[in-house]
Amino acid sequence: MTSIAANLQAVRERIATACRAAGRREDSVSLLAVSKTWPAANLRQAAVAGQAAFGENYVQEAVDKIAALRGLGLEWHFIGPLQSNKTRPVAENFDWVHSVDRLKIAERLAAQRPATLPPLELCLQVNVSGEASKSGCAPADAPALAAAILRLGGVRLRGLMAIPEPSPDVALQRRRFATLRATLERINAESGAGLDTLSMGMSDDLEAAIMEGATIVRVGTAIFGQREYQTP
Image (cartoon, rainbow, N blue to C red):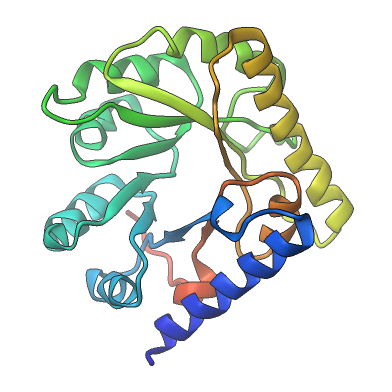
């Protein structure tokens, strides 16, 4: 067993344990392997070990890996900040975008999604910790933004995403994730949209996220190891 395969198994066991502690079904939480900065060969190892969904932050790097691994039937999620001039390759190549934080981005993705592809699945990024440096709309603004996106064609709003500030305080972690869950519940109550996705929780806080209702956890370091960052 490769180290990546062993790491994947360990993360899946963490997810299963957290689901049991939360009284949830183990299959109610999906694992998104955050593969930004890692070469296609590492992703291929993860795919051989049964991982099908990968999260990327850098558009051109991701498009190259999607091309290199096209025959594996993988699912691609864009999870990084998205600039207006990068929406077309994302609309054309990805299955999900987790980082929509303003209507202009959603409109461009909708207009640029090829008609031959299924609707692009979207999550709104919500800034649940109020950090000035963090992307995402304010929780109070999310319902209006969701309502506008629900009217677009070519995309399908699925839920919300958050990246709270890092903290070892589990109670604080849970409060941040609870804010995202409450925001999704408010949107569903006001719009009847039936949003079903909470993309929250990473290597250091996935247990707290699962306790608060996460349906997708985004894990990179615990699978692939520490990254050596390069300028994209």
